[in-house]
Image 1: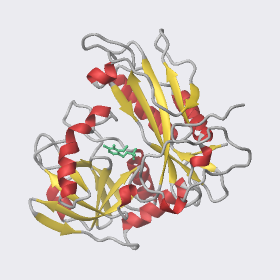
Image 2: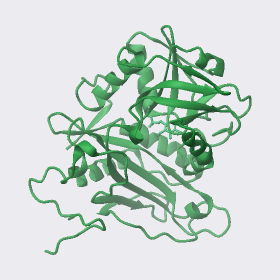
Image 3: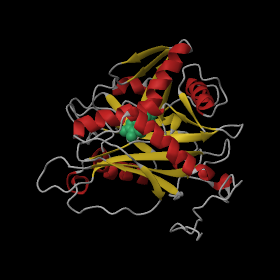
Image 4: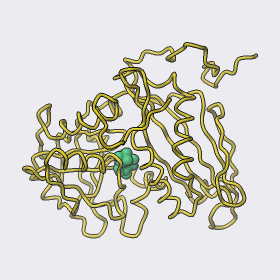
Length: 355
Ligand code: PMP
């Protein structure tokens, strides 16, 4: 049989016994690396998903009249598959991502895969790209599910067809090269989301409207931007791709997920772990002045993990926070990463083994 070669020149047929793709896993960062296969499933005429399939990773055809290209009718998700010490593979709370996608689909009038279809598809695509999952401790396989209106529309209306597509990309442990500690700029002129808007779902069009703000902040040396509420400009909301927490004494506070911030899976898990560890946890509106006075600040997300915030700059004033191994944020990080990578016992049934 002729070899199937991807556009990057990788042989798509797995050779027996070949555990890993041949690459320098110590150098892996946060770059685009195409893997072997992607999963695709299109809704049928009756508005349900029936059968999906794995196909070689590569460009897809899309109708210029599609609602995603014209009106941004689309969602995405982000998850990781981890290689355990014993070589096994697991994902973290995939049902939560499936349910978040369903919430978004309801808002954007897309067809959503059932939780079972979603989790099954994740397993298929992870297994098909198994040799791209970094060895234990070297990183993870980032999983990117997309859900979008792929059918043609004339005028603003929901798509007659939804496509569910999942691709993967191996990544290292350091999010975009920063060593896990971040310097944030508080932005009070451009809000990211507003009451009644789509901040609470992973809408594809939530992200590009703030690219200019984050680009400017990065040019000034900041890692990212911390956005404020759109109405009073005085409560903290979230960072462009992660949730934010503050610690004062024994109390951990984080803005409530009431529609203007994304209900992060990591956020939910950290709240659970912090309560188990005996911290008081408050989901409530947090004033900018409080964050400035905090003992510790940290961000949570699939990509960033738990990242301690080293400094926050607000109206030209820079405040620094406690960082390092002895902090609460590192304690929480070690707990969640231990569970995700299979090093610590998963008492809550959060991990899903892939075999
Ligand atoms: N907020 C935003 C805006 C995000 O894009 C993400 C990443 N999904 C998060 C928070 C963190 O969510 P999670 O913990 O589910 O990755």
